[in-house]
Image 1 (spheres, rainbow over the protein chains, first blue to last red):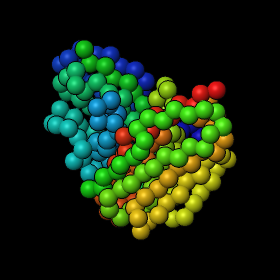
Image 2 (image 1 turned 90 degrees about the vertical axis):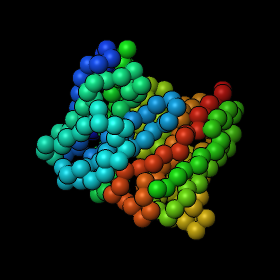
Image 3 (image 1 turned 30 degrees about the horizontal axis):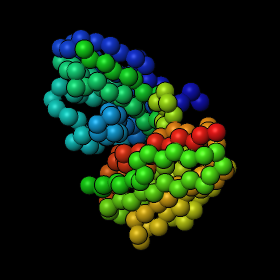
Image 4 (image 1 turned 180 degrees about the vertical axis):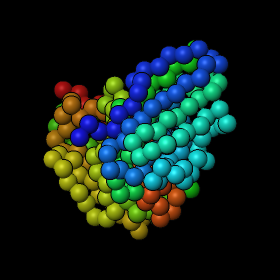
Length: 112
Length: 112
């Protein structure tokens, strides 16, 4: 099994640009989670989906952030417009049983 | 929402020492996770436990549901154990399908 796949692995962009992060969960997993990791706040939940439906997006910092899961094998996290304070590592994780979580390698985002 | 306290934040020890990392959480949970993050950033799930004790190689995790406390032990520590160890629990009481909330992590360095 390839594990959770995230792309890109690294993204450098200028303030104001749109950024799209992508995640392919492990086949057969029905829950998907987006997390963000910063030095100041550590790891925090942004949003999660169950059977492609967003369940809790209360962790999304503001309207500039949006996430979609159009099908069971793909999810995106979009930031528009991006700001320097969005610089972080963004992790996607998937779960087969609503308990065990498998993390992707993360996308390191730098907004200059 | 659940809150997680982890200690110590930093720990430096000599090779061969017995290591203990502690985690406390605020509300009842279905399962607690111990995660490992190496330099370079990938997150690996070490344990998910809801009661008692689990062992994998030199790693042992215990949980006391009544006291809302868990410990991660490393026996015969080795420099390759150097990493950040993170405790995580469901964000909401009784949640299993919910996303996780995380401790700040314990930065462990094992010196040869």
